Image (tube, rainbow over all chains, first blue to last red; front, side, top):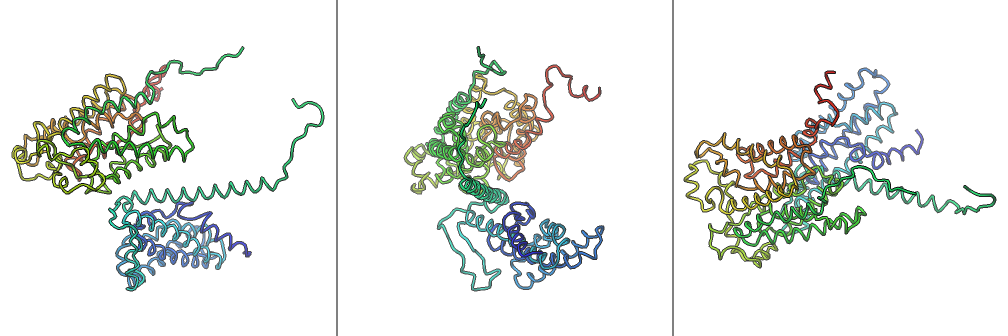
Length: 237
Length: 349
């Protein structure tokens, strides 16, 4: 693995091949638990942890598992990592564990994790696999937290409520009320809001991509020497 | 010599989109008049705000999509959405509520799906459902009808305008009442006759005011039918199936009864839905046979949700559910193409 490939991995995980808004994998937790920033952060941390651990382990055993049993083996590894994070959350953030509920064990079936294990970690050496797991998790986490923030602001008119569930007592007053006297816009917190806002984020990403492409094309145009066609001889029919 | 190359169809219908839309707007008048007579000027204020927002959002969407402004704004389709939503909302609804609803209807339900003629869901009904599940308190705040309260308590134009801006005195907050469908839903102890006698909201056949609003929309719908804006299939089958299922479950007026067929025909948004929502040419089934199915299932769903669901009225939910099903219905009710054998025979041969 050369140096540039780490750059490629980062770019892929965070933007070009973002698991949440380009591959559209792991939509179940993405849509289900992003009703507020704190839920999104909890799910994001859990996913980053599981992705990194599973990619590392899968990369370690990639040469000793046969093709026939590789998927069950990967799922066992992922399930073990999920159990770890579940127990950790139960110990250190019990209320958040209760809020996330069934969606924490469901990380096992999250397509992002199995997808990265099979598509990347089972074919690449240890360090790049570990890094890929971490960056893919971060790409997923950024979208989760952005979505959680949008839905919390539109839905309740405030942001960063209940941060003490994860960051200790001192975080209890992090809540910022953006609009006083705000009537709760329930749809943003209910499932339809998740679909609408995910769609908006995807649209925003596509808009930025087209703009980048347009600028690059414009740059390419100006760099090319402007040539004027001069008719020298004969007729052009 | 050059000939103009015209492609078929050479005969075109006399009904252009703007003309149809203007006829629909005209046909809502009797219903609006009776709503205004019974509930005060709130409905008119709703329509005023909704039309302003609809034109503004339509212009914004057209500008973002780089479409010609004048052409699309003058076809009145945004105004029809505005009128339909404004009629469905409680009279003198808060102005922000109308803005959110119209914004959702025009920007998301209409233009995000490709604009006029491409929307899979009826924009006015989708916006109504969005508001109903998001703001249940504001959406169930119906004013009391004339007859249940004195005429002086009905909001005049200025009162209604102030109330929609949230600046009204508390006077009009006191005179909101549960709608008849709501009363019927919550009733589990009284015989229907006793309920009728105890609550001032009931009129001769259904709710006071509601029955005449429904008659108004029925008249408007019959006018549209007469002008051949739509065919009779969908509305008639919807009303027929609603009547049949209401008759089947009507036991003469016990506390568990769902209300008489006539009550259901003249309550809530029945007639408004049957003639102004179910007949939407874009979101309903296409063939005549398909429209019969489409309307019939809506009628059944309306009664089902009204009687055993969580919400007192159900036209919007029923219509949205059937909008989902319209392509499916179209698939199975494709008319035979001229010159081809019917589907079954073709498969055998």
